[in-house]
Amino acid sequence: MIAQHREAFSSSALRLRVDGQDRAYKFMFAQKSPVVLRVSPLEQIEHFWEPRSVDSNNWETIGLDRPVRHIFEADLFTSMGWKDLPEVAAGDISVLFGLTHTGGREVASDSTWQPLEEILRVLPVKLSAGGGGGRPRVPKDELLKLQKDFPWLEGLIGDPESNSSGTRAGGSGDDHVDLPMFEESDDEVDVLLDELRARRADWATPDEIFDIDTDFRVTLLGGKWLAMHKGKACDAFRGQVRLNTAAARWVSRCGLQKSSRYDIDKFTERGAHMCAQVWRLAMHHFFCIWMGQPLTAYAFTQADFNSWKPPQEFLDLLPGLHVQAQERAQALVRFRPY
Image 1 (tube, rainbow, N blue to C red):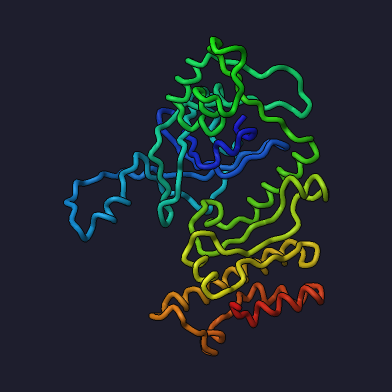
Image 2: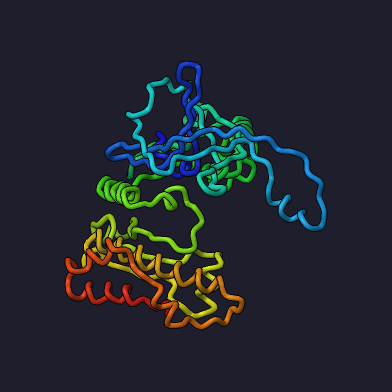
C-alpha cells in the first residue's frame, strides 16, 4: 500500500517501535513492481524554543524562524531497504508527514505522528485498468472526521463539503460521499515508470534525494508519455536552473541558457549524467563569481574563465565518447555561461 501511494508518503518519516525504543527513518523511494521501499535513518534532535524580544531589526527573522514539533538529523548517505529494518507489527509503525529540509543535514516537521494502520485504512482505492465495480461510498460525517484527524487527506480525496474530487450520489438528502478511485496504467507502462524511479534513485545525489535547495539541479528525463509511445523508461539527463531562485533571476537577467540536455543514446547513460552534472557545476561556478561582485552588470574576465576546471573524472570519460558527443562534451571543458 505504501508503494501504491508513494506520492502521499514522499515527504514523510516512518517511526518503528522496537523493544520499547523508537527508531525513525525518512521515506526516500518506493516502487510496486518489484516491490521496493528505501528509507534513510533519522536521529531525533532535542530542541527548545526560548522567548525572545522583538524589535525593528529582528522581527522578519523571528517571523520566519517559527517553532516546529520535530527536528531530525538525516543520514544523507545511507539507504536501507524494508528488509533491512527490524520486524515489527503494523500497529508499531507511525508516519510523520510534512518533512522538509531546513539546512545542512537537518529535516523538520510541524505535524504529529499518525498510526500507519489508520492511514492505510483511509487512503483512496486504486483499481487496475478496466476494473469494474462502483465507487466506494462512505458517510459524509465519517469522512469529515477523517479529514479532521488526517488533514493531508484533502489533497487525495477532496473536500467532503464541496465534494470536489468525488460525486455526491443521490439527491440532496443523501449523506454519503463517493470516494475517488485512481485507475492504474497498464502493467508494461507501470514497470517502465517504476524503472524510471529506481534509476533516478540510483543516480541521485544527497541534495537531490532530500530536495535541498541548490541553484542548479540535474534531472533524469522520462515519464508516462515516453513509456507509452517509445517503450522507454528514460532517454536523457538535463541540467537546469531551479525556478524562483537567485540563480534563475541571474540567468534571466543575463539571457543565459536555462538548461542543457544530454541524450542517453548519444552519450551513454553514465556519459549523459556526467555531462549534465558538469554543466550544473560550471553554471554554479560562474554564478558564485557573479554573486561576489558589487555590481549586477559584471562582465566575466579571462581570469574568471580560466578559473573553471571540470572534474578529473569527467576528463577521463571524454576519450570513450562517440565523436559527436565528444565534441559537445569538450565544450564543457571550455565552458562559458553564454
